[in-house]
Length: 271
Image (cartoon, rainbow, N blue to C red; front, side, top):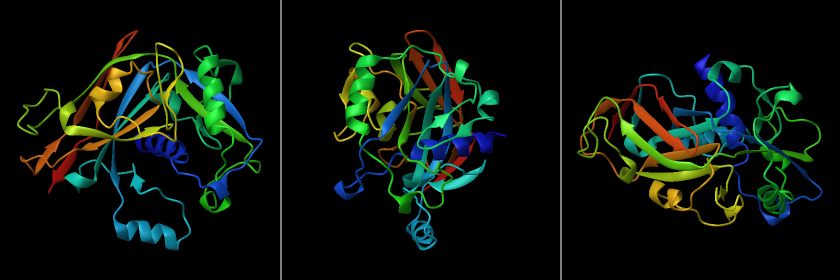
């Protein structure tokens, strides 16, 4: 069950991570927004693909962006390949197992009457429409993905709760000289935001759109009083000197409404 949830969530979010060129731009696309409260945070593990794996995907004509999240429990990975995936949503894991994957972003339920748990934010949606509304995935990047025949609708997830703090810690081992349970924020960098923007909880509008360079540290991200992101991918900023270690990561997110926590599976980290 957990693996199925992870795969659905990861694939849905990553489909939109590709960068479009001018030749790939389309027009007349409609952005369908899915605002949600931030009621749950999920701490999942991923890894970067090796050059050989990327080449294998390319030769098989399968779209990839250099990442994967379907790693097994107790997997062994070098520190430079480890990813910590922080997802937020409004629903429990059990309800997400029945998620339906559509075009670009996940739609958690076919029950349209109960699909949204938060009011729309008009300022943010207008700005996102301007930024994302004229983009479309080119055919070669959707060849192996079950997409609807019309690519005119982009399903856009965003969260409406403010993030006050985000803390990453190791549950089972010392890393970077920090005992288990103490913050490791200074030793992680943000590799990717999904979707690719940062919105302010103060203005309910964009701070960084998809074309701009975004904060690489958790501290810098929090400085902008951000709305929670559906997905943030973190990686080590350097190699922990204590390797090899086996540990789980704990993500603690404080929003304007509650404190959310989740713990990842065990991962064995080597040099």
